[in-house]
Image 1 (spheres, helix red, strand yellow):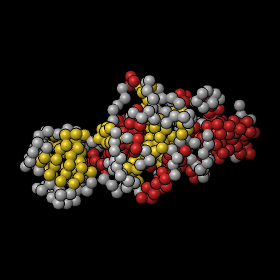
Image 2 (cartoon, helix red, strand yellow):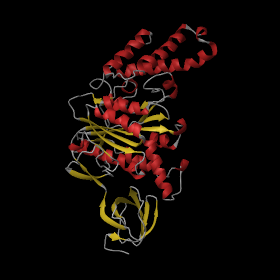
Image 3 (cartoon, one colour):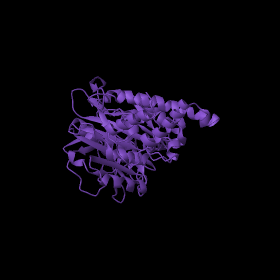
Image 4 (cartoon, rainbow, N blue to C red):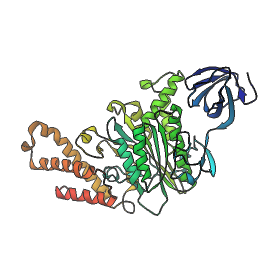
Amino acid sequence: MRLSRHTYKTISSIAGQLIFVENVFSAKIGEMVKIIGPLEQKLDAEVLEIDGNIVLLQVFGNTHGLDIKNTRVIFSDSVLEVPLSKDMLGRIFTGSFYPRDLLPMFRGEKKMPISGFPINPAARARPSEFIETGLSAIDGMNTLVKGQKLPIFSCAGLPSREVAAFILEHARLSQSDKKFAVIFAALGVTYDEYSFYMDILNKLETEYMAVINLAEEPVIERLLAPRVALTAAEYLAFTEKMDVLTIITDMTNYCDALREVSTAREELPGRRGYPGYMYSDLAFLYERAGRIQNQEGSVTLLPILTMPEDDITHPIPDLTGYITEGQIVLSRQMHDTGVFPPIDVLPSLSRLMQKGIGEGRTRADHRNISNRLYRHYAEGRDLRKLEAIVGKEGMSKEDQNLLNFADAFEKEFINQQDKRRSIDETLDLSDALLQRFKLA
């Protein structure tokens, strides 16, 4: 039964958080819908699919208590928008952009759809300028650049959350006079992880905004959270002219949510059961990072993902690698030796590093020092295979020196525990290591 142009009581079936509505006169993909249950409970939903006059809705919440006969569906004729203002800085929100910090909702200066506004490729400016994370393995060897998207590939059991927290706490621009903010999105976190991140957020000195989705909350919020975070980042960057670093963890939880919704919709699965459109969905998120020509402000993206079964060819890291500009790889072997952060610099890569280093950005000798470290560390790592066969005593003095350098590089350069290093401290330490082992 259709009650009005926008209100219907023609639900044909309810399956979990999915609702099928028949005989819908007009609807559009992404349209927001209000569900009114028989006990006057109110739920929000979004139009996922339209097939003729049948519309599929995804509900943001628990559908318990709803029935087919007495539930009303009200179409809003508008897509999901979020209010935006600089007042959102210092606040913590849910994946649906409701206050999680129990403070009153701020009054937005403007509203923007969470789908964002894609940057015209012809208007994109090249990423440039250095963002200092405080981690030598990134700043010195795989430099993060404003406007770049640089993922961190982790494995189960590795301290990816501690790495995320370190960057969240210590990241800053090399030029301190510019306006800088960090937006943090945590997807599908447990209460233990939520408590951990709250401790970090409560002591942040940098301006920040957080979007946190708990594991127990509706799966659709896990898909909304990164979109909300990036919409806020775009507003701060291109309206308020700020440089925004967006950290999202864990994209594996996002992709699992995408698979769960796809399975509920009975779509044909692709690789490992993930939907075939996962590549375009991830690209839709990652490509929102960037800079615009002749305009201040930038969005830099640092997504963190856990590689299932430590497999870098798994669809999630594989597709992410195609879209982004490099990767930071965490190593289980280095973690087992007590190194933090356990970043393996050899498979790690920042394709835009050259745009952010050098005179006037970091230091004139940065590229030269980085190349020498890579070369000698790679030689030392390779010699460990020979050491396992003939023993260290059976090797030449030159080879022993490279082995010692590789050990010192991991224990003194990569390993820094909770201590932050500036880029000058990183480069000075690098130069001192090379001189100590007399490596040109």
